[in-house]
Image 1: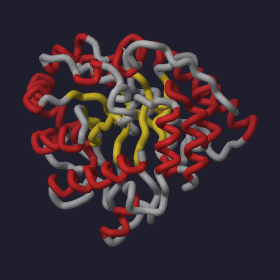
Image 2: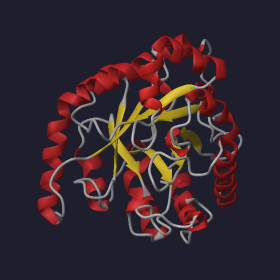
Image 3: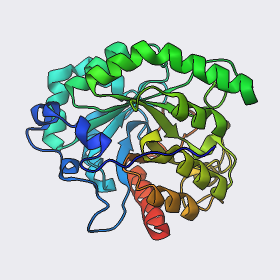
Length: 315
C-alpha cells in the first residue's frame, strides 16, 4: 500500500507550530524556527529528551541534560514511567515556564497514554500555552484484527477522532499514535491505514520499532510508506532482550541503538529519503518502570550520547 505525500516548500509542519507561544515561554526564537537541520550540514535528526529516561528525577535536574544530548526540547512523561508531567502541575505553570527559560529549553511533546486518544482536549489546550506541538498516545479499539476488518476498525477510530482533531487544529497540536502492543494501532497495516484515512495531518504516527518485527528493511519500507507528514515521532528503540522482566543491566540496555542486534542503517536511510523533520527520541524502558535507565543523570546522558554517536555513524 504505497502512500504519496506532497513536500510543501517553506517551514516544516513542526516549525510552524512554534508560534508566539514559544516566544512567550522562552523569550527568544526557538532554534528550529530557522528551518530544517537538513540543509547545509546534511540530513540530521531532531532530538527530544524523553523525561522518563531519568525516572522520577526532578525537572530541575533533568532540564540541564537536554542540550547535552543535542536536543533543544523535552518530552514530559507522567507516572508510572516518569513523573515530570505531575511535577509541572505541582510547581505550577509559571514556575515551570521560568525553569524552561532558565535552561533555554522548550516543551515540545507530552506523552499521555493514560488519557488516551479521546481524553486529550484539556491537555492540548495546556500544550498550546507552552507552544508544545506534539502529544503522543495509544490507539484504542479492537485488537487482533487483520485485512478488511482491521481497515474498518481503523476507519471507525479515525471517525471517533474527528472532534478531537478539531481541537488539535485549534491548538496547533499533532496527536501522534504510537504502535503500542495490544492496541488497535499496532501493526504496519494499521499504521498505514491510519495515515491513509486521517482527515487531517494533525493525526500522525509515533513509530516504535520495539513493538514491530525486528527487520530493518521492513521497518525502512514502512517509514517510506508513512512519508514525511505521516510520521511525527520516531523512537530509536529496538526490542533487544525486552523490557518486561528484570534482566542484568547490560542485557536491559540492548534496547538502545548500537547495543542490540537491530541494524539502524537502513532505517536511518529511509528517514533521510523522506527528509524526515519530526522528532526523534533515543529510548528504552527500564524494569521496574519509574527508575532511571542508569543510576545517575550523567550516566543516563552518557548512554544516550553513546547511542546518538552510533546513529550519527549510520548516517
